[in-house]
Image (cartoon, rainbow, N blue to C red):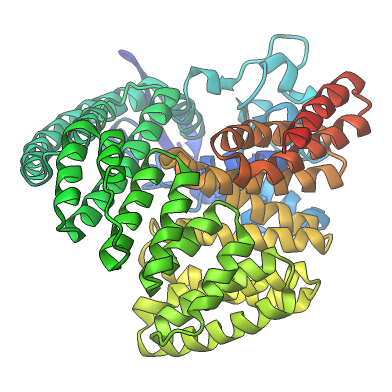
Length: 601
């Protein structure tokens, strides 16, 4: 006879069927598992919880394993989500541990140093058997990172991420459900092959459409370099369909793909400027550009000895600026811009030039161009753009009063525009609130800063609900800026939580588009490293600052004038860490590099 709280479970391993009696979790436990982890491994813990709770159990498994639940929704307890700030409420955590069927321990160097993980394990084992503990090694060697309470005298057994992230996930789910790993894995392999077939069919259709688009673009532009770029993009998109690629290969191909897509945009922009000029020299340059590239096109344009200085001459120089930007010759691009705006200082020409100067870190010159635009008769939307850009420059130049004045004017215009047309202008309104928050923080007006940043965050959360992908960067900016603010207020736990969320999103963005988002990723890493340093976690601070240094060194190599300051800032931070930890050789070596960079300025 079975007890009223028991059900019959059937476990199948190969050809062997084992009938077993097991208590129903539904009747005995509130949670399938409690995740015990170091706060520094929060991103992984959150990922694991999300993947477990969103895993769709195969229907056929309920025939083999009748004891399985219908789904795993809300089955995992993770203290940060369930009981925010509950570390002081030991009774609440103990209750959650008691009500959890199993304990998942995320093992890493961070976990070994965590007093709370030891306490959670000890509390769990008071009510449960050790076989109900699932150890998951996410970093390091098992014998070194599994908590002492679970090691005993034998070599510890654990689910190790080294076998692959996906295999690790399925092993954890199989252990939670007490079923055979092979049952889940075989099903996943079948699903994978099915996905490959579907993707191949979809890719075939996309390839046909892509070839048609390619032929169309070839007929329109006949640009040799653009054709090569389009061909390379098609090849990489085809390669990325292969799910057997390693993460490193995916990252490399994705990064190259984004660079090619940016180059495609640059070339299409250049072709548009060619379309604005109907002179014989411009048409000749366009023909050469299409057949032989940027260098030869510039030679043709430079051979023009015409003395006329009119709007056509201005357009020619705007085109020259675009060509020089395409080949990363920023000095000659600047000269071309100067000649263009000297003849035709229209809104489009002057705004484009000011934006270029800002990107080159020529802040004073950019400020003067934007100030010039303030005297123009512009639409509210264009004037708000100019005011917002000018506010950024005033802030960078430490002219805080002037920055506040122009931001308030921009805010009034954008609030009115957003009220009339929220779909088109809410994003702009959020940016102005965000920029004002940054300004108030730098000018030590903390209460105003928090209020403005929170307003931006709320608006961006609303926008992200409609279009998560489009506003991912915007949300990461709000989280970064709020995290930076809370760090300055010595609220380090709030700061760390927000910065970790920003870091997670910016890693994804930088992986998809390194050229666009690497600076933002480096910025969040730098701020988070500073939080760890302040909290005396020098190991983590050094690791993060070192990662920032690698990123900013590459940025500095590509554009020294724009990234020298932040590169120096990172070197100084690392020197400080090494001096604090008394690593004399590392400090001296980094100090030497720092002096070389400063002397080369």
